[in-house]
Image (tube, rainbow, N blue to C red; front, side, top):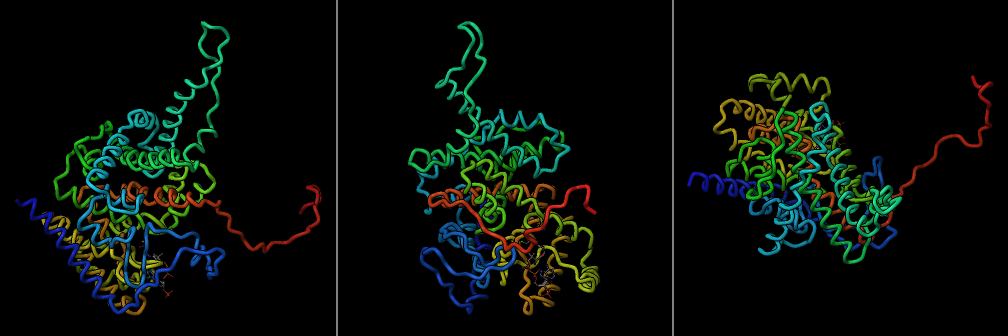
Length: 457
Ligand SMILES: CC(C)(COP(=O)(O)OP(=O)(O)OC[C@H]1O[C@@H](n2cnc3c(N)ncnc32)[C@H](O)[C@@H]1OP(=O)(O)O)[C@@H](O)C(=O)NCCC(=O)NCCS
């Protein structure tokens, strides 16, 4: 009964946040939805491809002035209030919410694909304790690729038996499988596109098991097998901690995964798409996404938010801390966004969840109060004038910390969720694939006379 009330309360909190968000930005003009592109198009482009349009998409839409985040037509608030990560992942790929049967068969596939004992065993043979979690996650994606290659290899051996010196000896050579396999998934007829979807599901499910194994290995424990009775969020928490989560913890983790699953053509999604556009394979593409997300300008600000909150220690210190930071022109971690010039809807959802979770954790209540106090300072100082609001990273650290997760795992968890968005964009883009090839303006010299090394100064 208490559990039911908690879960109902979460839905209620999200719907209240939605109401508030919509009221605050109702005066902003409605976005102009455009038709599919007719190439070539004119657009102004800033450094870092700012403003560049690279494709049309139905997967995700971010409207910065209204504070909207939409997945395949559905408002992020509604998805968080009523849906699950599995349902949302299905939606991202297929464009519609699944029926009961479709969801059951999708979950069954994810369950099957999160069982990757050989990959985990291979991962265990590396020095995972000595590597950063993001590097380990990327390594894990590479090992999944290897595993897939091995499966194909077994099949290929059947088709192309090894060439043996005589009938009794073991095969000495086998057909090389490298490139031939690599482009296998990206062929475009019906059969292969099912193959591509299955590989995407493998990446989503497999990375969550790899994440669990990384946390376990780094804390001196053996990796755990996935629990087929648990949903995606609960199983992720279980594989990381060894404890089955409470329904409240499971629900909150599920919401975090939904919130991070997709965000338009951001740096890591673009990196994934660029690699896929060369017709490399989905595992290499996901590896590129993980690499891009690792940078401090993309993933990871929530880790720094937690350090800041711990450093400030008490609400009484916030004003002095803020004054000093501003005097030194420092940036407040977890605030501001390239696209959102309104309150980030993800932060709107996470803030009340953080408050709810610290309720029975006295040691974290001060941390939450410090965060609220920083928010008040920043909003008064820069909210109206500079449109600086909390972003997704400001409250997500508190939520993860309340779930007992160490800060070093925040960015890899982000990757475990975002792999849905990355791979959905790849599937969509490959339908009309064209290799990405922007250009630069050459500003160097030309026609220099070659100077032999003896004469160079
Ligand atoms: C996210 C971020 C990189 C967006 O950058 P951007 O769109 O290029 O915005 P800018 O850095 O140009 O900022 C515009 C103005 O707002 C100020 N500003 C932006 N974010 C700020 C922050 N977090 N704290 C203080 N001032 C900030 C800038 O100093 C700048 O002021 P100016 O016009 O007086 O020079 C930036 O807001 C930031 O560094 N935030 C902190 C890190 C963070 O939370 N990252 C996670 C993002 S999800």
